[in-house]
Amino acid sequence: MNYLFAGGKKAAERLCKLNDVFSKSSGFFVRNFAKRKVNVCIDLGCGTGHTTRDLTSRLCPAECVGLDNSNYFIEEARKLSKNYRQIKYRLHDVTKIPFPCKNGDVIYARFLLTHLKNPVGCIKKWGNQLNPGGMLLFEETEAIKTNIPVFQKYITIAEQMLKANENLLYIGKFLDNANYEPEFKKKLTK
Image: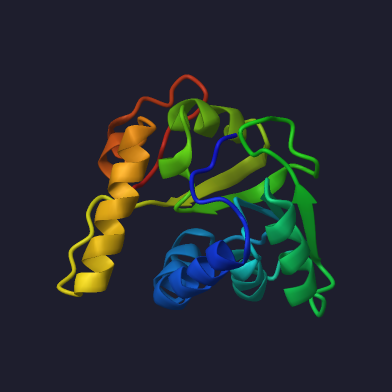
């Protein structure tokens, strides 16, 4: 998998800032949709584990597995999560199945699909990694509006980088209109 915003200390700092901004809304999203008991949760593109730890705190799974293709991120995630006995991290390209873990009751990703060449194909594959009745939960953007100049500049740079690689920053509407059948049917999007 070719990820434009590769691992390393600067990228880890960026992920920390993203988590500071989006953790609260992500928590609401996860609690709103994942209402049944979760035994195994899988966090795709887990980075340094912010979302993995949040998912563990919110869903209380017996096991939460963070997958990422960056050695740096996985090592940092392990250090930051040492007090979470139910969390495991694995170095893995999430575009490839099977995942190196049990099937999940919840498979979650935040701002990952925008970086993938074939996001709909990946979603269809990931559905095969769910337990019966499991849920795929994805957070992606349809639009970003801000009056903060530095954030506007960041968004412009990110959008240009993604577009140069035939990816979409504002992938939400594309994903919402995609056809996921016959593999599975989406139930609800917001």
